[in-house]
Structures are given as C-alpha cells and as structure tokens.
Image (cartoon, rainbow, N blue to C red; front, side, top):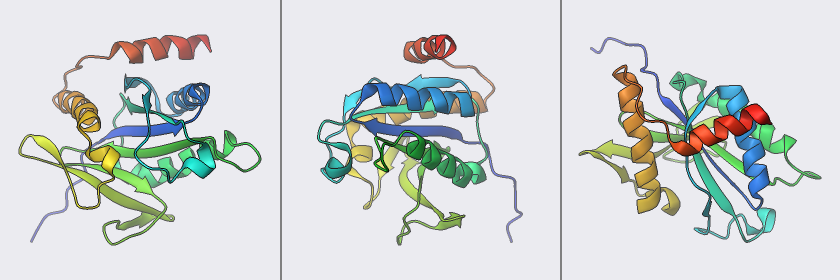
Length: 193
C-alpha cells in the first residue's frame, strides 16, 4: 500500500509564439503581472516545425520560452490554462488568435503541458483540460517520447528546458540560482510599461 503524500511544487513555464514580437512582449508582460517574476526567458527564435498554424497566424512565427520564479502546485495547471486561453482571446482580433500560449510545468521527472485536446497519452485533469506528458527526465537528461512534438524533442529546446530544470532543482534545495540577463531586462521593461 502506498501512503498518499502532497505533491511537490513545480516550475511554471510557458511557450509562446506569434507573428508579431510586440504581441509576445504584451503576453509576457501580462503573464508576469499574473504569475510573478520571470526568472528565465529565451531569445526569440523562428518557429518553423510545422505549417499547422500558418492559416491562423501566418508563415513567419517567432517563439519564446519563459519560466517563473514562484513555484506552483501541479493541480493549478488547469486554472492556468484557462487564464492563458482568456489572454489569447484578449489579444485576438475579430476572433482570430494572434498569439499562442502553451502553459506547462517542469517537475523533477518530467515536462508536462496543458491542453484542451484529449488523446491516449493525455489523461484528463479537470475542467476540460488534459495533461500532455511531453518529456521525461531520466539518466540525467530529458528524453522524448513517441508522441513528443518535434520542437520539444529538438536539441535547442532540450537545452533550454534543462537550464530551467537546473534552476528549479536549486530552488527545491533552497538556493537562489542564477537569473538570466534577459529576465532582468524584461523585469525592468515591465516596471516601465
């Protein structure tokens, strides 16, 4: 028999993409106001892994990945997904999304994303939100799964997520860790804006 234990806090991340860098900045600012200080943010990189979003967003998409300093409870992910969906609607024009926001979290053993689409590898959480187990952490590294999207399985993304997980590990041990210069820059621009 196993004895139920409270879940360990996890590190909130968001992946965002848009055809307009200004919209990414607006979304990141709103996310920071809602979920607190950002302690990691990637540079803007081209998002060209699929043409699935071309009709809705256009062809030249850019992506950023952000992580938040304050750890969260894993069971708060559905609420976060609902809030990011509302932010996408707020930033839309005439019902057309202009920014895509995918929240998730890093735990010691995996990366999990929130989605509104169920599938065999996506267990239901609550309120119409499913858990997408995207990567597992084993043998000192993230590993993809048969259903992992190619962009999350790529070397660059794995490197970014590993840096975020390293910071998370320091947080769990009660150490501060290093704050990326981009997060400091964003923090200053959020205060000015």
